[in-house]
Image 1 (tube, rainbow, N blue to C red):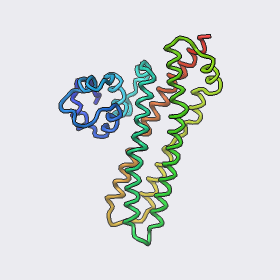
Image 2 (cartoon, rainbow, N blue to C red):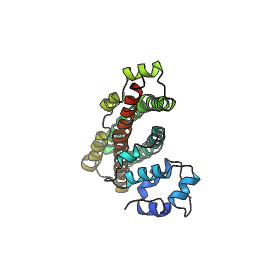
Image 3 (tube, helix red, strand yellow):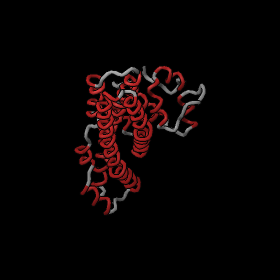
Length: 243
């Protein structure tokens, strides 16, 4: 199903509840009544077309209007990606960690070390994801925003040209490692090797959260690799032609 602007946002969530955190990243939270997507976006000063593209990307893996998405200001895309980072680090990761702690507490003394291993494994993943996000937030995104300002001004200061020589978005492509592999390993650890506990619901909830995080990160990376990188590469070429 293609999500359109005249649909009620509440109906969209009934159809695909997994879109709630994606919608939140636009500053739109539950309690919006019976408004359509277009109405609610206007109330929150959100670009309707951009909103539709992002939620359709997450809703349908086959949907990806690459050329159309590149027409949006890169600053809007960076703002969205930044909000996604906050969601991962401030909500999703802490929620999963709490569940793993709870699972460890209910494992009993006999198997507690096995569950502590799973907790340590997740902490290693958290460290890797945090480092990955920190590189994007402190190096990549400021660089992208700076390039957009240069394009808007029509002049390229020497410091920007120097930075482009020392760092290009192609460097980001090379260092943009896949942070999903450890998630897959952790899921395997829980599914195949951890001893059973009385309350299987906790393990089930952890797996649900891990699968959900994995899917979200996959779409997040798809937007960065297929939209952000080509957009910035085009900006770099334009700025080089200014001289």
